[in-house]
View 1: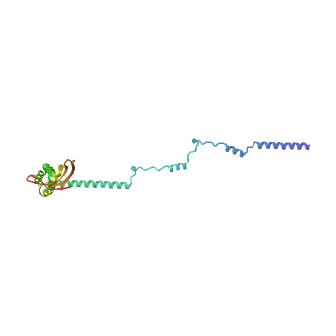
View 2 (view 1 turned 45 degrees about the horizontal axis):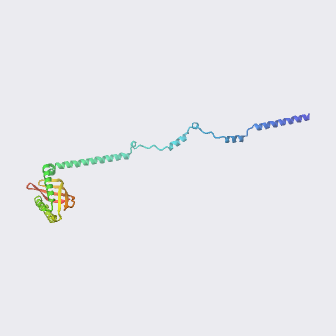
View 3 (view 1 turned 135 degrees about the horizontal axis):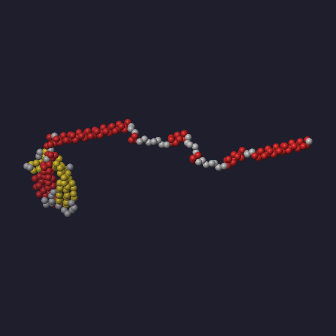
Length: 245
């Protein structure tokens, strides 16, 4: 009996040992599971599976956006308003000043001194003095090597006073040199204007075109501008003063 009991006890211990061994085999090693999980590739995240952006991230995106530019036409600054007022005042002042000048000129034309200037009111008298003086200047400043004496006679008819003396002094030298140098001078009064015409005295501004030729050489052209004072003697306009301008 004791041997049978010992055998039975030994068999029970062997059975327990086998059961324990089977349980150890069945139990999964936790470290091995973790290694298998690490070896598995990471699952790709799909955009549609991403969580919605939280409030903090939304506020960050709003801060990153550039500020909206203000449109100048929608803003009204006090400084801009003052500038517009100043500009309007300047324009109004200019208009008032221009009106005052025009009013003064119109008044001046209606006054007696302006009315006496017949260059503004008498077209026939103005045209006559313009024609007579322009013709006289063209004649006294034109000559040929053999025709200086004819020019001198014309000058005696259309020049008087200071103008006659000045011309005589200059033309004496021309009469001496023109035949030997074979100088020919041609003058045209291209523009003449009467500045004032009061009574028997006229003041004119004359523009001349002159052409000078020496012998067979090519003619040389030049221009001159004269201020002329003329007086009416015996119904003939004569030049009393000539000034180069």
